[in-house]
Image (tube, rainbow over all chains, first blue to last red):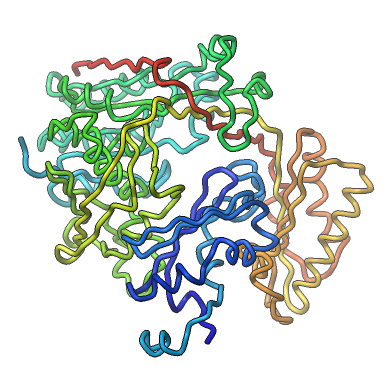
Length: 113
Length: 455
C-alpha cells in the first residue's frame, strides 16, 4: 500500500548556500529500514522535480534512525542572492513529507498503519 | 576540576528573543552563557557601519545586554563567550568595559579579546602568492570578484577563546568565530581537554551544534507532535550539562515551556547538516553517526558515544562581496478567481518589463497561498482560494533596471485585473545584494591574537 511520509517520519531542513539539506527522521525505530529502502536519492530528485536543479546526495544515520539529503542547486542561488520566499529551504522538510512510499501489508500491519 | 559544567545558549541568531539570555542567567544555575551573533552576511553589515563610524562595527545589543546581566554574572561567576565583536572587537570590549565601570564593577572582572580573524588587509598578498581562495561551492577564483569584496574573515575555533579563559577572562569577545567553538572552549578550559583529544573535541562541537540555534532544539520549530508542545510562549532555551568524559545532557530551566525530547534534539542534530561523517570545524572533524541519545528524566536528553577525527589543516573563511541589486514587489488578489487574476497580473507585468527592455539575471514569480513554499509539489490550488499574494522579485547588476521595476508594481492596481489590494507600503525597496563567498585557507597563514583587559 501507499503511505505518505508524514505517517512515518518527521523532518527538518536548512541551507548551505544554494544547497538545501533535509534530515528525515523515522517516527519509530522499525520505520527506518523502510525509509532506507524507499526514500532513495533518485526518488527524492524526482520528487523535487522543478525545484532541485542539481544532484541529490543521501547519507545514512542509523544511530538516529535518520537520512540526510543534500539537494544541490535548489535555492535560486541561495543566501542573499535568492529571490525565493523560502531562500533558506526551511519548508523543504514538509515538502519531502508529501512523498508517498510503498509499504508491504506485513509492514503496515506491524506498524498498525 | 568541576564534575559538571552548565552552558546556556542565549541567542539562536542576531535578533533572537531579546529576553532569552536574561532568562538563562536568572532562571537557574548556569556556569557559562554563550551568545552567537554572526550570521554569514553580518560581517559585511558591520563593515559598512564601521566605514561610516570608526567606533561602530560590532553587535551593540550585546553591550546593552551586558549592562543588564553583568552584575548577576559577576556575583555568581557566570562567564560569557560571544562572537559579538564583529569587525571591531576592541571597540566592543571597550564598550563593555565602560558599562562595567558604570555599574561599579571596576577591578571585579577581566575581558578577553580574540582577534586575528580579519584577513581583509592581507587578501592581495595571499592572492599574489597564488592562494586562489576558490569558492567552495562554485570553484570560481576570488580574483573574479576582487574589486567588489567588502569583508574577509577566518572562522576561528575554540583555541584562542580557551587561552582567554585560561588568562582569567570572565567575558570573552571574538570577531568571526565558529558558534560551536563558543561552547567547546569553556569545556576545554574547565576540564583541561587536550586540543588533540578528538573524541572530546567532537563531543563539545556537537554539544555546541545542538544549542547554537537556541530554542530550535527545545521545542521551537519542532515538527514532531507540534500541537502537544507545552507553553511555547515561555519557551526555555537549551542548556548543555557537560561531564569531563565528553558525555552531556541537553536540558532547560525548570518551569519554562517547550520541551527537550529525543525527537526535538534529533531535528536539531540534522539541521544544516552536510556529510554526517565529517562535520568539519577548525577544532576537529565530528562524526554525527556516532551520536547516541537516551532519556535521563523529564526534559533531559543524554548525548554520549561521540567520536571525532583530527582537524584539517585549513580554516574556512567567509568573504562578502557586492553582487548586484534586487527588489521584491507584492500585491494581494481576492476571491473570486484570485489565483487566475494574480497570474494574469504577472503576465501583464512581465510584458511591460519586456517592452521597457529591462534586463535581469533573474525574475521570479511566486503565488503566496498557492505555491510559494512547495512550488509544483503543491499541485493545482482549489478554484475558490479566498486570496492569493502575487510576489515578484528581480535581480541584476543594473541598479537602474531594478529601480524601474519597483515603479511597475503599484500601477497594476489601476491598470490590471480587479479585486486587488495590499500596495499600501509604497514602492518596493531596492536592496544591494551582499553575497557570501566560502573558501579555505591554510591554517599556518593565520595567527589568532588574544589579549585580556582589566575593568
